Length: 528
View (cartoon, rainbow, N blue to C red):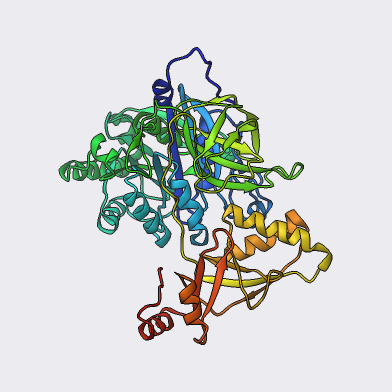
């Protein structure tokens, strides 16, 4: 699985040009993990896809390595896969779709150069999809859209194009177009070449789809009215100017669209080929000072994710680093931008789901797993040569709060160690409350399912059963020492310390209460 490149090969810029680093994002249940497997299958890096037909069996999904993901049938953490296809090194990041894990997904989006957005043919644009599109827009991330599950009943194809344009403001420019309505899928027409490819699910659906190129005459005879309808729809697309423009795509003004069904491996080959052709390679990256770090400059990278206990036999911790510039070499001594201290990269690995290989070198766009890098935190920059600092990663204000306790006094050390680990990974924010003391920290989260994941991991990885008591707060705002003194006199308000950075957070039951308190104290600092 290792994609090591010989030291005698072309320069860093050429190696960066061989990379395509993208995330697969969508609303829950749109098929992200299934698509991840399908892409790996088409690149011949796995022999057979674990086609996921029901939520209870995900053991075949290479990107869902956590036991809870396999048992519950959901992705709760992002995963990195790297493989080579047609001479191009693919860095594919699968992300959780559930809104409760938005923070993890948004961090991943800082580490990619483009995204593949999956839309369920029957459901269209769902709330989480809209949020993710907006984040991509804000970060000017080019988005390629894959209309998934076209082998099942769904919406009209033209209606989906209208929905994309009207609701998110991106002009859809279909690169493939389906012959047959959703649920009666015959194949796709390549709009740029006019070639029709008939598609058929392989027996069992675990292998590559059966594909056959057919002439227009053959297709017309075989599919009759469906072929005529597809031709009429293509004429409408031509009239509206819905043609691919590479500059507009890279400028995040348009979204190329493809149709298929990931679970049946239909249309996946076309997607992978177009990612290689159209998705942008790594480019110069903005720094915290407003300058840009060129890809062929000295080495630099930043940590966008930390995950512990992926290998339970060793209880290790992996910091996922996106290489932004230069050549990374395992064992090199780099500088931690936040502390100015040296950092040794002795244990560097390439991650493929739960599997891993030692990696000796990497280039811009690659994701490197730094093992047992306990001094690193999310958002930390590493560099060699001239000092570089990348912007901090986005942080979301929590909306759910719960006190966490264990009744097992003999497990308290493990309890504390587990809490520190979860805080360091960003699974939850950990707050210290003066009212409750260190033995009862407070979890703060964007969504309540984060609590479930935290409790599960404390028991599964640290052997500590915990009790969660939810607190009646929904809003948090940063304050200062003076604000803490002011708020002591207010009821239904509490000030807690965020353990990660000692920030003071004032928490309120709702926004109305926060506005009322702020109105009584004009000098009170409350930063959302």
